[in-house]
Length: 120
Image (cartoon, rainbow, N blue to C red; front, side):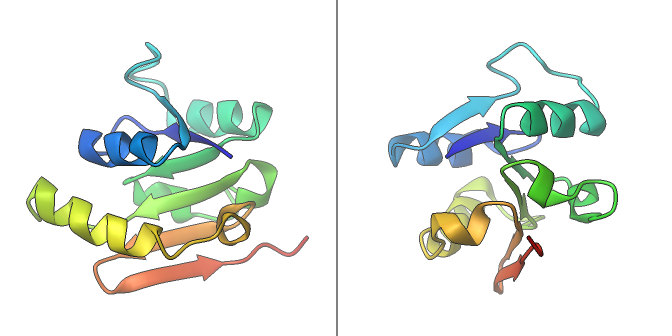
């Protein structure tokens, strides 16, 4: 599973994912900063990557159907220190399996994880 990290995602989350062996392509690191949400989605679809973002626009299923790319993870942990955000993210991300993510919309909040499974 390859993850495409949107530029609004906190760097410590990207570093954590990489430390677990996940193949992560960061928009910032790849020189694609400033591309639109549509361009993020199109690239993820072309390359079958999972989008991970803090942008709640990606929860709009009709605009960004997760089954057409590798899946979408939206991290909705706002207005907290980065360290606290990372602790919450790690707690819930570790509970996910690849089949929970692939082609689905996963929303991680301070309260837990919601998975909107795609009909395939």
